[in-house]
Image (cartoon, rainbow, N blue to C red; front, side):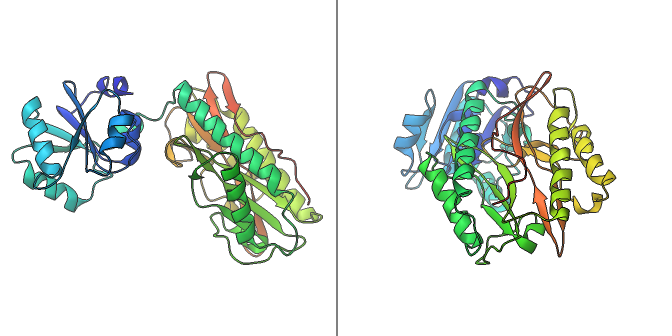
Length: 352
């Protein structure tokens, strides 16, 4: 992963990595606290005693320096800058607070601190084969959990119970944690795209939208399915079919060379033409990796060009206050002439 960094036009002599995700990406250290100092001559993980052994085991090829006593992070960074001849240090301004940077600067004398912007985050856009395999495995765990939860959804069970069972099933399939807070929204709650599960009991005739994901060896999954408890009425069937058509069209449009806004427009136009454009307020999708929401995105505002081995969600929805909502979401990998869909759960309307 360091090869990607050294190929960039760097505005500084060295890079200080602070975000947990970028530390893991660039050094394989998964502790989440500390810093990684990167210079062509020195690659160093700086941690306190809680993480020393872990860093030495995980960050192969990196030096590990432990702070403690009168020696703090700023002291180590200052010394590394001096030893490597670093006068300009790139830092993650989107991760570190103003007060943290101020404190480090006070320790580092004349060292110039230069904001890195999104440089490090953007290194993660295109996934390696290993990364893709982990994401695909995470999504497969979600598929298995969805197949199992269908046996539990019935009138009387609460949204919280459904969420808890989904998360338990993903644990049983081999994941350590969720990739985000599970969404289970039934009835009128399904009109809220990011509804928080409540003790509301699911009733016959409810839409039930479930948006969930897990982390497998550091990499996230993300999927959404909407079902109906009992028989769907005509309007529910209409909304579901529109969202399904929009979702399938978006997936068919994805390929390297398309922009995020172009793909978004394909799905959005179908919903608009059906008369529900005002009820689809979010972007069509986003990238996924070590973080659940990464760039680039599928949205009207994103004009980045998609490239091979980028990951994207495709998740159109219609949300009508006072009635309910539908969202269908798959996770795909961009290819030269299309995409590979990692989500295999059925998408026809399921009536439970």
